[in-house]
Amino acid sequence: MLTYFRDVWDGVVTVLIGMRVTWRHLFTPAVTIQYPDVKLKLPERARNRLYVNMDDCIGCDQCSMACPVDCITIETVKSTPDVDLGLTSVGTKKRLYVPVFDIDIAKCCYCGLCVYPCPTECIKMTDVYEFSEFDRENLIYRFATMTPAEAETAKTRLSSYEKEKVEAAALSAAAKMAPSVAPLKPQAPSNAPSVAPSPPKPPAAPATPPPGSDAPGTKG
Ligand code: SF4
Ligand code: SF4
Image (tube, rainbow, N blue to C red; front, side):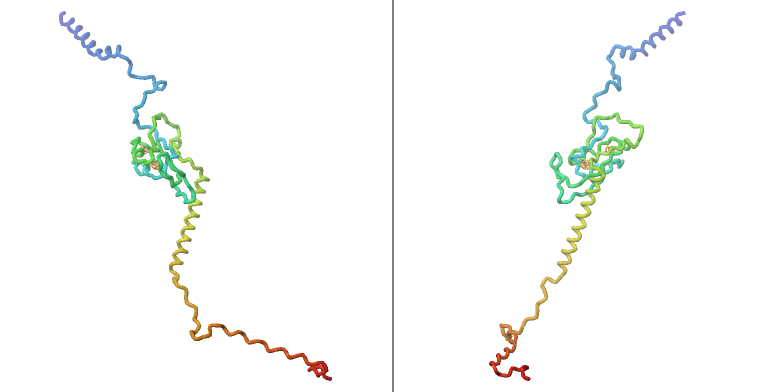
């Protein structure tokens, strides 16, 4: 009989010990939030969706080279000397058009390695972390602001400029290859008269015959 009550007591004590954590948390404030109606404030250096400020991008490609999964695609076109692309907000001269700047965020592993080498600090991690899509194509973010027509114009201008440069270089090389002194003209002998002989004068016209004399051709 005594054993029976002891077993009951042990059972009650064991349950109370097992429920100790549960009881403790019943009277402490909740640590969960009502997501998505309520959202946690992210730490300042949290790594989420990338953003590129194209006004400051100089097309240096350093972010793309640093990416371990090759999810950044950049295409650039050189500007010609007659075009001024301006400065970035940190004072860096822009010399390249950037007609393509795509990030395939579906491949991105949020390592942040693309952010650190950027010389103008224009590629950044934002605090946006909800960007799921039904179509994977929508996860390719296209940041370039140039239209295809503008890109084509820039390429055509560069191509004409380079062609002119090559032609100018060829002309310059040809001019260097030509003899530097022009061939001398044959010199006149030193004892030649310095004044050129005047052309022979035409014979003087015959004097008018005096009246009454026989003029040639009037006889007969
Ligand atoms: S965060 Fe990492 S994986 Fe994502 S684009 Fe930048 S370098 Fe590439
Ligand atoms: S490193 Fe910065 S400036 Fe260079 S291409 Fe990338 S985003 Fe543009």
